[in-house]
Image (cartoon, rainbow, N blue to C red; front, top):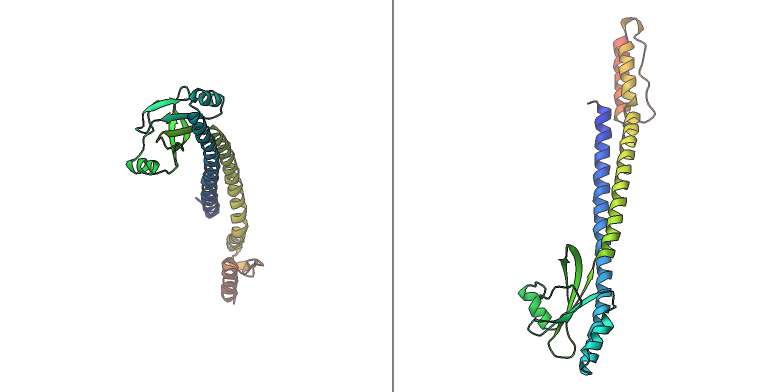
Length: 229
């Protein structure tokens, strides 16, 4: 493998790794922001459900509560204070979500918890909160993460396409840049092969840039001057 190819490959690899790292950081940041926004919407839905639950339970009309939420975009489940199933949206599990003892203590202490779990191989975001009527009932509101997954899948596909384009451009750019950087080396090789005893006056063209290659050519020309003398 010649030097020009090695330089272009190293340049491309460095640029690709840098872009990939930046892209991954941006990807996870966007996902974090989307999940935060999703949790805000879930909290608003929980506020609505909890308020309705308090009102209808005070009026002793849970059936109206169920009817009102039957057309909602989200799903809900109500568990008793001992975490037994009471009622909820159709097709949702009747078992209490798996939680650590610490999370259960926080929930019983009045904290609002957010969890993520799979229901039918579909990721869902879950919010749990004690009912505000003091009964100790636990309200669970769930919503599939389809919107977030859709955005992230589109973003991931676009990122792969852009990375492929950047890789092609970086290889092309690296080949061109390494070619320009190593062009004086080609002049050295061509001039050295042309120098014979009969034409010792030939000299290597000195590039305008005074970099390492330029200083090397100046040194070689000085050596040729001494040899000719």
